[in-house]
Length: 440
Ligand code: SAH
Ligand code: SF4
Ligand code: F3S
Image (cartoon, rainbow, N blue to C red; front, side, top):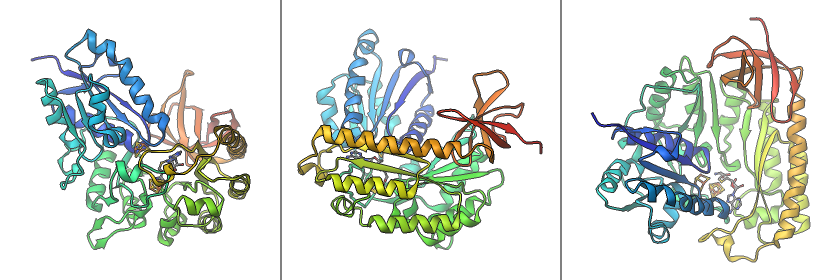
């Protein structure tokens, strides 16, 4: 038998790309490819790319440039570009980077095996269709060998919201929810392999409306059914839009013990003027009242958010309003970005804020966020939490895992990976906590 072909995948961008990369590896696995961690060993290199900001997209081209010597040394090496840059730029990638053999978008990667075969025969291909058929129906069942105790599971994909700054509706296409039964089957399969925590993924995951046994299911309904799967201990979901944060989902947070008390709910700005220009379709006050409602259902909810500074037209007063909102919410975690004009989006037509101004605002905002994150982490000291043990730590006898609130926790224990241990948090380091296991 011939040596298996080796596949190296590099993943950029969001968690959905992490999930997609796994599915691509599985699809090519059925064609005899095994994954390698070393690009130099690979017969095929796939870059699963992100188009969200200019820097992310440009990184792909510099990484492709760095593959040139490898391809020269190994002419049989196949190079593929997948993901959102592939969708946005298509053929253009082949023109700019002749070393690329195939380009495949996020909705057509179930066709990757055929494209790989064509590449092996020296034929280049580009597939950026939004096909009629559902890629999930054409991907192989998830294999048995495994695994980590945590997994991502895409339940909804695409976006119809068209925020003025964002490329996702163009790269991922229209909002589509997977049928509930498919999601449940995939979840059960993951649990059989030893997965204890599943993070449901969607660009607007809380807009989930997949077909169920008795009509369309909401995300809350899906979560409640998943909570009945034996062996599945923790459920998370991301990313949510404030306007889709339905009452039944908020209620589930108060009632379902398996639904973790951590919620990523991006708001982008605290200024109503900017929110309007961004087409977010809600006000800062509506967002704040929503968070009050969520905290009424689940008082210990750890809030997480995303912010964009320097959106076209953002004044000092607008920025101050964002700072006020951050103070009012008190985030456990937040991600912030300098606005990046994206080709084809409405905001890209507008005059940008001066780079120095945007840089200064980003620094100011990040300092506030960092202090909130630190305070939230330090406030965990002395508290009892559950930690899902994910892997061995660097010290002998040490394990690392995640608390219910998604903090990384180090602990000395004999318990194996996949166990959920009750522990008391004893100290806080800059990026993690230390815990001591409580006797059962
Ligand atoms: N679907 C999610 C997030 C999508 S992208 C949502 O609706 O919130 C993740 C984050 O990237 C966004 O929340 C936003 O903060 C940031 N982002 C998106 N487009 C951007 C742009 N053009 N410039 C800077 N940041 C951007
Ligand atoms: Fe982008 Fe807005 Fe859709 Fe989120 S809701 S993916 S930010 S368009
Ligand atoms: Fe990036 Fe596409 Fe995700 S643009 S953030 S990889 S949906």
